[in-house]
Image 1 (cartoon, rainbow, N blue to C red):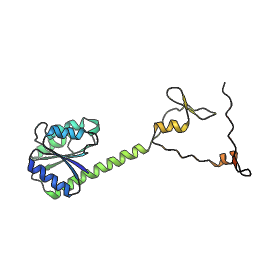
Image 2 (image 1 turned 120 degrees about the vertical axis):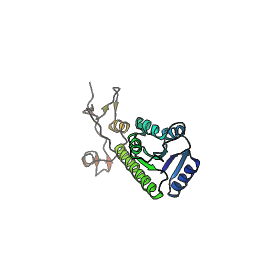
Image 3 (image 1 turned 180 degrees about the horizontal axis):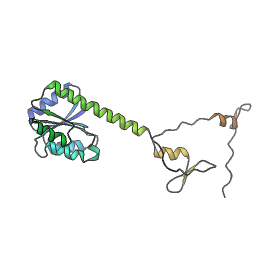
Image 4 (image 1 turned 30 degrees about the horizontal axis):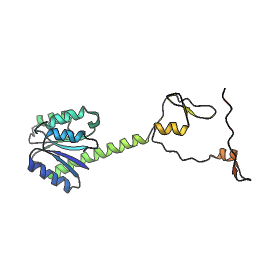
Length: 203
């Protein structure tokens, strides 16, 4: 998973990047809060970030607060990394919108476990979002012709059922012949398809 590191201390930044890379993650590193915010908001940007509390430009607390007010960032997993380890500091950090809180100097095993929780959380969120996209249900009244079965679209023109549904969902169609139509239109003796009867003329 791609992980954003926002840490203004170059040594700490480099050490974090080396550790995360060793664990198999792709790392994006920045040295101030403004660049971190830019990376988070970029299309396809990292969904997991380790943010230093105190940084130039914008601190980690502010980034967490802004992220929770931004629709596309609300589900991002944000870990605050700081030397401030008092209970009241941790409470402030979590209430700002951070998902987790790691105190420096950090323990490598603890950091790996906390990052692992973040990775699993994001993976589950992505799987749920994909499932929601696959499950689509048309709601409301759909005006359909009783003869030709075309559907009246929003602008008043008529569309085939396949066209109407395809434009409003991710459904794909594969055409076949049902048993009733096989019996009705297929002449087994002559081995040819009988053309379907045209619908009654509309007045």
